Each structure stands twice: as structure tokens, then as C-alpha cells.
Amino acid sequence: IEKAVFKYQAGFVMGDVQVKRSGAAVWENLQVGETVSPGDTIRTSADARTELSAPDMQKVQIGDRSVIVIQPPVPVKQ
View (spheres, rainbow, N blue to C red):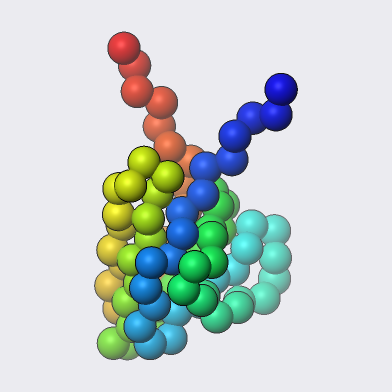
């Protein structure tokens, strides 16, 4: 059985928002509808922002002049 991969999807992108894929050396422009996975890094320039949607419909907003690394979800203990 293959383990599910957790991915976020870019709901909107405004300005210069780039993604560096896990293990990659180059930055690429992030496009609306593109997915990002744990280990990917996102950076935004001045006056840029993006919003990512998780599979559980939660949203993450990333403001201007930010650099974040996508982390895997933390399991909820029951």
C-alpha cells in the first residue's frame, strides 16, 4: 500500500512568488493550481503573497518578504 503524500495547492498567487522543490537547486515561479509538498521552499518578494489550500480545506496565507519550508502534517493523537 502506497503512503499518501500530503500536498498544498496554490489558490492564488500575487506578485513574485517562487518555489524551490525539495532537492532542487533552482527557484521556479509558483503558478495558481500548482502543488507544493513537504520539503519544498516558498519565497515571496516585496508586495507578493500567496494562499495555499491543504487537502482538509485549511488555508495557509504567506505574506510578502517571506521564506517558508513546507513541513509534513503532525499526526493528531487520539
